[in-house]
Image 1 (spheres, rainbow, N blue to C red):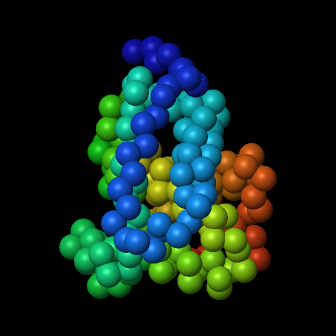
Image 2: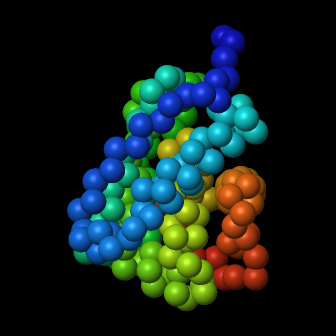
Length: 176
């Protein structure tokens, strides 16, 4: 089967803001669009990943309490986390029409950004890229998978003018 790679694939980003904490961010839509589009283009051009036309990704912006429930029910971990991804089909030959859901927890993202000395929008950009890559089957459970995923994240963030989030830091718990 021959797969045609089409960089012009449109990606619909369905946004649901569940927590009013996210309402305070003036640039939320810009950050999301920029991060997800960069990850999509990298996946197409550099990784050879194919998408169906008019793919959709669902982005949910919630709080620590809600993501803690999701983390407990889906992963057996009774704690809040920064981002969770729920792929529709992480082993597809061609992705779409629905890629899956990415859920973000405001308080954890905010706390981590402060701990890392990063602007909130820069950390959120990284987490958008990270969550999107999970929808495409990238993972970080095994060391070799983690190395691959991190190298792709670093390359995408570099294209966005952001520094390597893993350089000189202790890795955060990002087990989505």
